[in-house]
Length: 114
Ligand SMILES: [Zn+2]
Image (cartoon, rainbow, N blue to C red; front, side):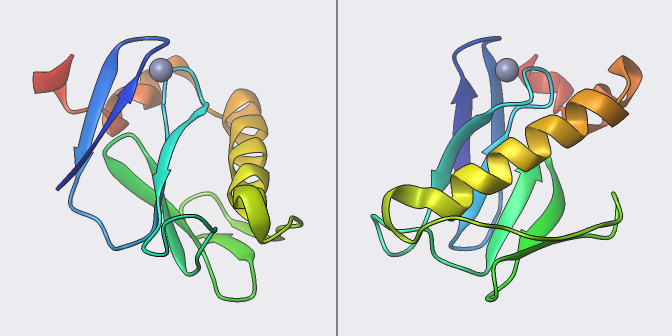
């Protein structure tokens, strides 16, 4: 179980996830943290969560894939300083900004934590 806290809207999300995770806040749509089993680099494959729901994977060729959203997009970045994760975060932010409605946010959230 891994927990993330969005300091902007004070939401908390706990997920049972794999070793590499990028968490996006469904309300603020920003990257609120990542965990990677290597400690300092963006390791793939990586699971991308929006709140409680896993929505996408970054595969070992740094392609972001989401069945839910119909995304299949090569990420561009650098290995150092979590460059690929930043690219994913920016892409997801743009995607959520333009396609998600307010009501859809609730499916991502654990009501107990709100
Ligand atoms: Zn937030």
